[in-house]
Length: 166
Image (cartoon, rainbow, N blue to C red):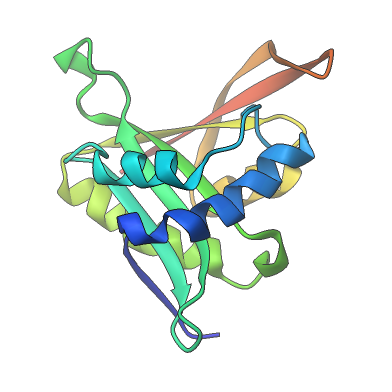
């Protein structure tokens, strides 16, 4: 598969919701509990933080968006955290293990570094082994565990914090 990574556009909103909403609806991989509408996703893309990174991975031939990755500033309440970003990664389930995440990480990490981020933090459900493996494969290290951090369908879920120094 010939993948390209590029900055997300408002016109990608439908493709992005088509990726993330089934993941949310499954209740198995993320702590998000509400799906996104296309207009809400379009708004999110248009007003994404200027120093953030919002990339999609697209199949070059079909022009289909197969995954996306974001880096947002960790906090806006303190300049002391300006060097830290929160990273999220979503890949269409039909395209796992096809280098989509690897392609996104290659571009995202370079851009994040160029925008002044020195450290990235990911928060992943403890039972999401695929995501944990993916972040570890790309150099992240486990830095903590938030016990019973989320409650989904009456069940408590731990969340793992991973970090990467750029």
